[in-house]
Image 1 (cartoon, helix red, strand yellow):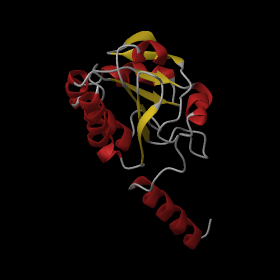
Image 2 (cartoon, helix red, strand yellow):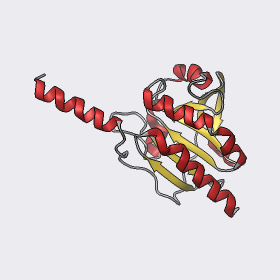
Image 3 (tube, helix red, strand yellow):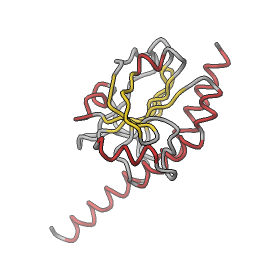
Length: 181
């Protein structure tokens, strides 16, 4: 690989890593496809059902590229720190990745990441990410967060590879929904 091509490739990866928006996402008002996925919460295996979770209130479904990577670790940590705020607003959280289910056991319990506050699910072959327009061309989940109403419709969507505003913006959307209901 010549030097100019290598520098261009490094620049492209660096630009993507600092937060260019993802390519697509479902629109507000869209009825989502429910899913049931193998997952972990606090290191314990479970089966997560979006349909069951929606019966209790809004659900924040956040897609992330891969466990144990810089942006995904930060995003999980931020969601864990705000988990009590989501619960106070009547909402729950689920993280979904096309990454390996084996890695999620440790990720879900790690105090620097999920801290056992919410489940993380494995989306084998990124099937759910694709159905939700949250899949990158390289076959992994984009960083896209949805707030899903109890009726299964998208209330809010934020799609940005920079993890910093996902919690703030989805929590604001949940609180707005709660104030109206």
